[in-house]
Structure formats: structure tokens, C-alpha cells
Image 1 (cartoon, rainbow, N blue to C red):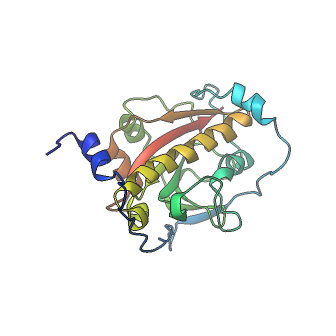
Image 2: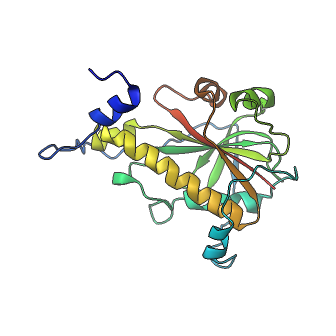
Length: 228
């Protein structure tokens, strides 16, 4: 029996000729019923801005250096690829299961109280779920990465069971792919505005899950550090 967890995962999620996917049900997205606060985001811009290929030529991960705050409009545009538009979001999702959730840890965003927020894509809103940021714990969770210049952290989490309900174990692959799609578009959106964005893929999973108060079955995927 294969003991290597990565090899075991790929072996169990293989799809062979003649096998069928479960395709049982389309799951529901996460909604906080009683947030501490809600923050509506400004309408996102759909036209204008720098040309795509000029942005792609500058697309490289950069840690924030200036230490200035982000504006609410900055944030709205950064989150634009995650927003639901005409029933779909701005990135591919197998079976439209959308196993990816997004949380924003706000340090310095003009017009937004510091704290931890869940992003609600259907209404393009932030729901506050914690009123303080445990900065020392976040730095430790990110293996000592300095956050002094960061304005916010955008954390993508995975709920693989949503994809598994449709595609069996192969759904775990789709959940990982989707986190990559979403994070890549956020990097593109941030850097296209002249902002700094850095994907921190290495972190202490249990600490991040604890800081976000994630329920069983929801796992941290990638942390994007945002700023100027």
C-alpha cells in the first residue's frame, strides 16, 4: 500500500476509463449569518486601466515596501476577479462547485476597521468575523515573515468536499487548481494597479486555521500579502 501521502492522493483520485464521477449535488457557498460588521465595497471598474500585456510583463511577486494603507477602491478592484457576476465568478470552477473561500485580514485599509473579514462574492461585501488582528501570531504562522509594511492579508481556503460531492476524490485536485486560478488573478489585479502582492505558500496550517476559526473540513490554501 502506498504510504507517501502525495502519491496516495493522486493514485486515489485518478480517473480510469469506465469510471464515473459522483455528480451528486451542487454545493452552497459559505455565508456568515451574524457578522460583527458588514462592509460594502465600491463598484469595480470594468474598463480602463493598464493594458493586459503590460501588466503581465511586470507580474512578479513583491512584498510591500512603503507601508501605506490601501483604499477601499484598491480593495474592491483586487477582489474583482472573485466577485459573482451573472451567477458565476471570474475564474473557472469545475462543476461550479466553488470550493475556494476568501478571508481578508485588514491592517491598514482606509474606511475599514482592522480585523478579520470573510469575503461574500455574491454581494461583493466583507463580513467582519473578528474585531482584532493578532499580528504576532500571523507573523509566526507565516514562519516569521515580516508584516510591518503589509496593508492586508488575503487568505484563500479550500472546502474540498464541495468538489468531492461532484467528482469524488478527483475533486481535491480541482480545489487546488481553483485556488491557483483565484490567487493568480488577484496578483494580476493588484499588480495592474501598481500595488504589491506576494503569495506566501509556506505557513503553519493549524495556526492559520485557528486564527481564521475555520471549521472542520476547511483548510488554508495560500496567503497573499497586499500593500504598496
